[in-house]
Image (cartoon, rainbow, N blue to C red; front, side):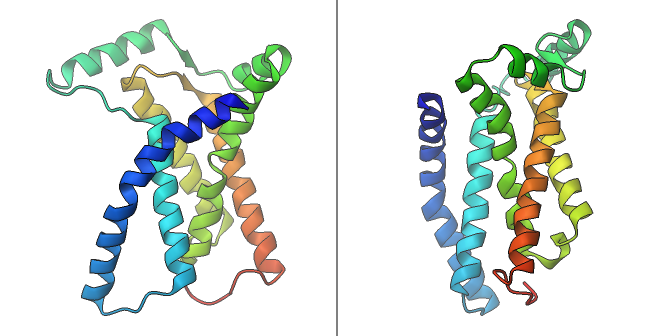
Length: 193
């Protein structure tokens, strides 16, 4: 459980720095559009923005040093592809390894964590925007976001794993399932968002 707390502590500063920027930007945007804020929607929108910042803080930050240009990053990525260094293109290889040999904490972080970190990606967009209320659209959003993160990690010398994509997509689908169940039970309004 200490590792889970560690991840939340790492996310905290990024999210806290975003709060005043978001509040100012959103207030100015609403004022320019002459719209009155709807408390529930504004809360969900802020939650989604803070979630995206937290997700980025754990997957693609810190960004590499670009002072030497893109060439070293591209060469490093090519070398990694050629050698398969910290790259797993085989579905379920990592999942099986953790399932059979991982400790409880490793399984919690790597398996449950990869599912859990994408649950909001499947839940919040359908709550906020009508166009994401179809399962296939939300699944595609989750798949593209996860593939995008894995692609960027290739250039960040972080592990690149197809199993992360599988687990992220599963998390997104679980998030969408929560949305669908909530909507069926009348917890979420059917109004146009």
